[in-house]
Amino acid sequence: MIPFSILDLAPVTEGSDAGQAFRNTLDLARLAERLGYHRYWLAEHHNMPGIASAATAVLIGHVAGGTSTIRVGAGGIMLPNHAPLQVAEAFGTLASLYPGRIDLGLGRAPGTDQPTARALRRYFDSAEAFPQDVLELLGYFEPATPGQPVRAVPGAGVEVSVWLLGSSLFGAQLAARLGLPYAFASHFAPDAMDEALALYRRDFRPSARLQRPYAMLGLNVVAAGSDAEARRLFTTQQQSFINLRRGKPGLIPPPLEDIESYWTPPEKLMVERALACAVIGDAGTVEAGIEAFIARHRPDELLLTANVFDHAARRHSFEIAAAVRERLDVRRAAAVDQG
Image (tube, rainbow, N blue to C red):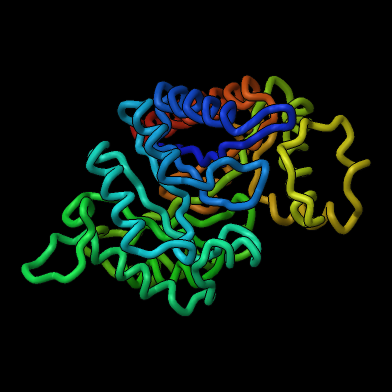
């Protein structure tokens, strides 16, 4: 069976604070490690009260230090916000502390609004400078050469798994050209998923970092004891999307009994399109949904996310998903033996 991994935004729920969000993140990462999830990623966002993962590298260190075997990384670092040298130093430090466990996913969006992007004192020129910055960053991870004027210390010669992230054809093209693994943000922007995957796989050029294309897809998975309860839990994520589009991002809200009373018809269409890659339900529904998603899109790995208000319910959702992975693995092994 393909690996399952987790994307966490360190959600800050109504009535809580960032400190509790960080404790929840570490608790969930430890659970993920016990359940056999492959990697645990955190994402950079700024000026969003409900997301506490702004200082992403710091939080990655917190999670890696509190776990033992699971890979930990960024999904991702928004490179326009940072100097490539500083990113190389930060992740070179993390990889020196936790060798063989650190991933660096790179995105080209600012992860925030324009005023905040300006406050970060970096540029945002869309796609124009991003490829050069990626190449510069990759260069800092290469072994230093004699007379090299600038080197990442630590970072030079340190093993860091570098990924490109994307929600359009741009990232797929660049990942294919550079021979890097690719993660597509299908959990919130699925429109170009099939075309981007086909392009990445068709145009992939082997590199010293990766010999064959490797694509990971984001998938919203909210699992509970019943389909109705899972749909209720999912209204937290639906509300968060609506609030963001209304220009009122806030703390993560509790679920609603009736989401229809919250959104307008155009908002409903927007949310359903953005969150089309979602499997919501009890164990049986989730198993069928994940199996169908894998069969249709053939990802090399799944990156599951669940923006659930109650931490215990969120833990339970990932427990159900892990059990689904095990059942699918057993069925696949049986099919191979019979074949």
